[in-house]
Structures are given as C-alpha cells and as structure tokens.
Length: 538
Image (cartoon, rainbow, N blue to C red; front, side):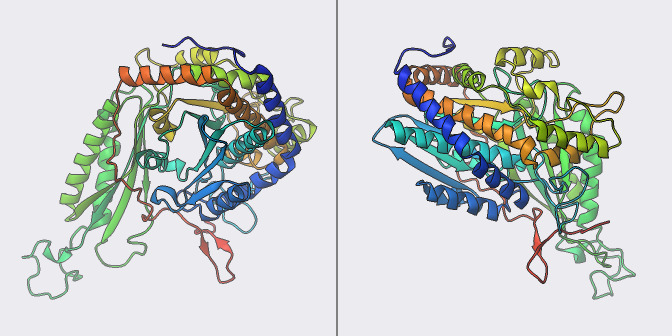
C-alpha cells in the first residue's frame, strides 16, 4: 500500500495555510448562523424517507449560496445533489448531509425528560444526532467555497443530501445512479457515538455489511381455506366456519421462528446483530376478519457479505413456510444491501492532521452548567467536570484502531454498520468522528437514560463545539486536497490497489429503487394543521 502522508508536504504551502485560515475565520464568523440552522433541523426531527421539510431547507439554503441543486436526486423524494465549481478543472470533492430522526425519541433541548412542545414522547428525535452531522458538513463545505473564492482556488464541490440513514437507504441508490462517479475524494463525518472512535478517523476497521428486507404477508383469498369446512356459507369469513389464519398469524410465525433460530443463523461471535420492526398499518383494528396484510422488516449487520447471506437464507426460508402455514402469499422488498467499507490510509492521515491542528472540542461554563443541571435532575451529585474525558481529547487513528481491535476476533475485518461504506467503493473515502457531549457515569449508576444524550444534542452550548470542530476539520482537509495534488494522487493509487486486491460488485441491481412508499413512520396533521404523532400518550 501507498506510504502514509503526515503533515504538510511539497506544494503551495503558503496558499494552503492562508486558505485554511480564511476558511476557519468564516466558520468563526458564522457560528451563530450555523447554530440556528442546526436547531431548526433538530426541531424538525423528521423520520426516514419523510424528511420533506429538512430536505427542502437544504435545497433552498444551497441555492442561495450559489450551488446548482437537483432536488429529488436518484428518484428519492427527500434526497438532493448540489454542485459548485470555481474555474475549469481541478479536483472534485464530495461530502454530504444526513437529517433523518428516530421515532420514539422525542426530547426537548432541556435539562429533564420531556418531549418537544406539542408532540408525543413517541414522536421522532435526533439521537446521533444527524442534525449536527449535516450542519457540520455544510459548515465545512461553505467555508471551503469561501476560501476558494478569496484565494482563486480551482475545483468542484459536490454535496449530497442522504435521507433515511437509519434504514441505510439512500447512498446505495446515489452510487448506483452515478452520483459519486468522477469524484476524487469523499469525506464522511459522524458525531461520536462509541468509544474509542472519538475525535479520530477510522483506520483499518471500517463498517461492515448491512442488509435490510421487508417481508409482506398477504391473505387475499381467505375463501379458499378448507373449502369443505362450511360449504353452504356464502360468507368467506363466517363466524361458524373454519377461517383462514391470516396475515397476522404468518407474521407472528415468522417472528417467533426467526427469534428461536437466531442462534442457529451464525456463530455467536463476530459482532453481528439482527433487528426487527413490525409495520403499523394493515389490520389496524381488531375486526372479526382474517388479517389481510402484515409486514415485518429485518435488518442485520455482519462483518462480511458471506455472513449476511447466511442470515438471508434462514429468513427467506422462515418467511416462505410462515406464509404457507397461514394461507398467505409472500412478497419481499429490499430496503438496503451494502458492502463492507474500504479504508484509505492516505486520506485518514491527511484528515487527522487537520483535526489535530483544530483540536478537540472544548465545553465552556454554559455547557458544564447544562450538564450539571441534568445530573441534578436525575438525583445525582453534579460533577465539576461532567463530560467524558475522551470528549475533549484526540486519539490518533492508529491508537483508536489498536484499542478497537482488543475487543474483536483477529479474523474480523469490519465492525458495526453505516451506509457510508457504499461510497468507499466509488472514490477514496475517509470516515471520521468528532465528539458530541456525553456525561461521565456516576459511580455505581451505570449508563444515563437515553433522553440525556438526545437533549445534549439539541442544546447549543453542548452541540455547537461539535459543529465548529468538524466543520473546520472538513474544510482544512478539502483545502489540502484542492492545493496538494500529491495527496490526491497517493489516495487514488491506494484506492485502486485495494479495489484490485478485493473486487466487490454492487449487491443490488442498477435500477433498484428504495421502497419509500412503504408505511414508514410519519407525522400527521391535526385540524389546526399542527404536526401530531400517534399515539400521543399511553
């Protein structure tokens, strides 16, 4: 593999340094705006494939900043693709926004557990938060554009809106449709969510394979169940007849058998997982009829495609037999099918050099006070230093890799999942993390309730440091790639070498379309036009 770069190398170093200073100054001057933008997206908190207002905000914002924007890119209603060029030629660089939230996690940006005003606790909320992911990358993008204009730097900036990351829905589609073709480098960012990946870049261990599939059971011929049971009744679901079991029975058979057989799908090591979600439409009331339709979504994360295929085989077989037992027909729909990620040491080191120059986030007195209020409201003694030490520390990609590997099997190349992995098959890509505030556990108390991190993700004093640090890191990396052709050349050489060593063709057909029409969770409107989420309470 190509020798890793470190620090500044040959090239117009003076221009590079001046452009970085200009870009960082732009972020400093615009932090109030960036904070307001973030809070707007955070409050919208729209779930996967339903991010209509969030996507529209990005499209309008980018157009006002001079970008050419395609709304609904790749045929996805809440996606977009934006582009801006300075001069002719030069590198083509890409980063992206995510903005989907998670149902069942509605939390106000305050110091106690309560939903956002007027909404149910079961409405969506930003848990990661993707709101900060998007505004951080937007900050880096706009700061780079500003520096390119001031210093006459040639190149093209691309920015994609990637909806439905929680079901890993959009990046595979953008890839199949060619939106990443011709890109020289991609920067992928995510707020920190698990140690040791805090204020660092991924090195060797990238995210693994993710499969997600919906199984639909349809009982559309209940009258043909046991024809001899009540031949004189003209009613297909007569109270006195033996009636078809129906779609709910098929779903429960699928659910039960798959849970029981989970240990038989794969060995219980390697960090794989299986999740399920039952869609809420179909037989929504307890009528005295066989349920006509029921749907269950399975999503599984595996270190390798081979392991993911083993799980798929078991689930498909279970679904087929569950449908037959309950007198249903079976339909299946892919949601996502991703390949494991490819690493790029050149870009990882170049980005970490910029993160090191910026420094880890730091939390001021207002952030500390917010954290202490939360601790006090939980009945804990407020700490003088309430945040995890790691949130304000850097860790090199190599050290983070070594710490990560201590908990993994030697053969395991990949860990967890995220759909940025699809991007790594189209261009050299770096994945990096900047801390979002997390509280130190109180002695003997274990983890904090989930609402705590959700709230900290919406409080400006505790989330703005993430946006500032990530934005400055992205713009510094972009300026290096725009002004130092040796970095891009070495990143490309490494990328091509890894592609040749381990070819991995796409796992879905070129015309694959995400199932945005399924009954994904959504906001509805009440008689006044306000957003509501059902159930409002239990």
